[in-house]
Amino acid sequence: MEPDGKKQHFEIKKFFLNGKSLSGNFLNDPVKREITVIEKNVRDSTPALIGLAGFFGSSVSFLNRSYIGHDFLRVLNVIAEKKSGSFLIVLPDTMTSYFGNQYVNSSAVGNYEDFVVKDVVNFIKEEYGKRKMGVFGKSSGGFGSYTLAAKHPEIFGGFIDVSGDSGFEYCYLKDFPTAISVLGSKTPGQFIEYFRNKPRPDNSEMSVMNTIAMAAFYSPDRSSKIGFQLPFDRKFHTFIDDVWEKWLTFDPLRNVKEFIENLKDEKVILQVGRRDEFSLNIGMKGLSRILDNDKVKHEYREYDEGHFGIEYLYEDSIPSLIKALTD
Image 1 (cartoon, helix red, strand yellow):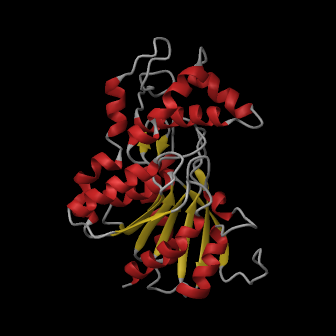
Image 2 (cartoon, rainbow, N blue to C red):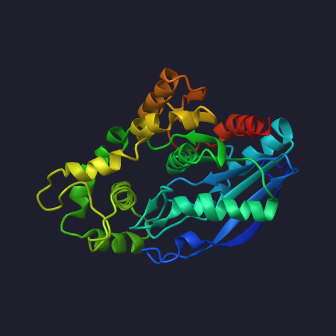
């Protein structure tokens, strides 16, 4: 039953996948991964939508229940009742020892782009047959959805990016002073161990962990003992421009021009709260304006919201993506 007493209109299944793309990953994270699949009236024409979790979350995060708002499962119940008689939602476990994922290949973390576009996609084909596919997510999951769909139009016919990482100066730079101060004389490895063992990290420690993790995804360096480079010097506090430039190659606000032709053939949906605590609304609006300027049809919606508790936005975007991929 739903929290409001209503019947649940879908089925949840669990599978396990041997993620060959993760074999030999730098962190020795598990290769065998759980996949949660949520089905409602699956037909041959039903597209498969892969859901990517935000940072500090994974597939099970989509199943968290809330009794004061529309969590993801309640969103699907609303969609099942009112807007779509059929859906196939695929939620892969993508957790790492850095407490989240950016869904790119990194020698310091693992080949998570390949994991999604090869291992997860092959799982869907084997279990459900060949069908159209889309990808969706919020925050880091939104960034991953944009990145994977932009790079792989042969796989994905569209994506939903909810408050995805973009405009890196606005969403990441503000954490660097905190990271420098909190790290102090600790190495990243020492901080990670401290973070892992603390019962409840505070907001500043979460910011430091996020900065470390972003460096592992955006500026890997196998010649370094920790496998990556930070974009600042911990001792002298100087900014390292060439490392930051590596980060910027992943910024949707900068790389979207490279993928314009790919995006013209896809269903593109961008959603964001105009009061986003990480200033992601700035990058998302800029991304939309670039798409407008290059005549890429897309849906862009701003809401009077922040970054958290906005799963209900999917009530509009998931049916829209399903319809576009079905038509």
